[in-house]
Image (tube, rainbow, N blue to C red; front, top):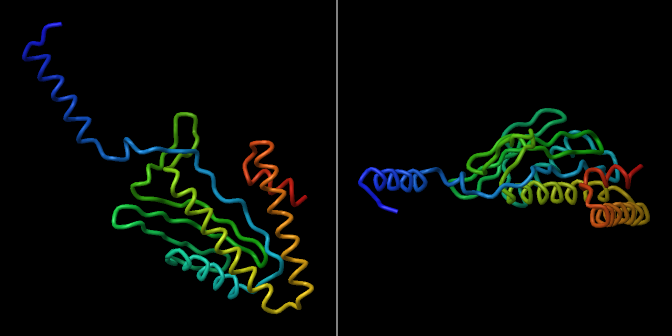
Length: 183
């Protein structure tokens, strides 16, 4: 195959275009899976829930952006380039972490209508949910006697074991398994 100046120029332009595309074009992406809603072992006041969410987020440097009764918006920054914002909706004994917005994390909706994002934020949201669960459940145990605490911890452990076993055996999402395990 002969290269003339026109073919060479097209090849150079194509190569330069690929080099100048934003890095998110090359980033991996997975289906956006939000953590399963969490049911606590007790009922907490609005103030206790706000505190539990705030303190659970602080474990991994999440910052409160907005708070209203039943809702907290948190933001996590990874360096100067990456940012993830989530909503935490809650009642006196439940909460759920959901995706709100992100910067440079390759969030998009694919041609099939499926939300996708880089895999790291999926783990960040799961870790946040676990941290909030630990902090809020510790609030539950703070005012209970040891037998109630042990019973609640045992129930929580059994539900988590059920979710893990269900997800592993059936390849279902933790959300579906959570519903099956708590019915």
